[in-house]
Length: 138
Image 1 (cartoon, rainbow, N blue to C red):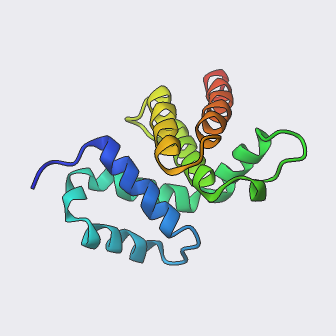
Image 2: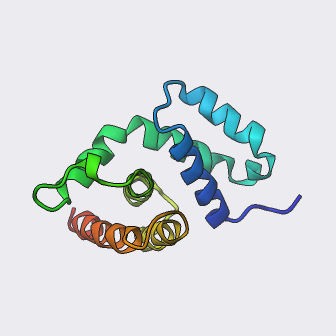
């Protein structure tokens, strides 16, 4: 079995968060992720921390996203794909000890290109750029 790259682990993490967006049992989500994807064992800590972190900090992450939206926009107006990508990237930027913020942004844009519409990638890039500026100033 080949070793899973961090980019592939991030993509798996995105898809799991997307699937379990309304999850109520994070332990089950974590367990199912590794049961369904044994190749991700090499990135277990990263994936488990990401699943738990995004789940536990969803309200905080959403508040950050909402604060960066244009006037008149709400979270409900964002595609689910962009919403999940933004949650994951902001979590990585703020709490990912081994993820440089620019790498989190670049990876988020790539996920948006792959899974979103043509307008998702520029939207994700712009919003995360604004979040990154705030993080640098903290």
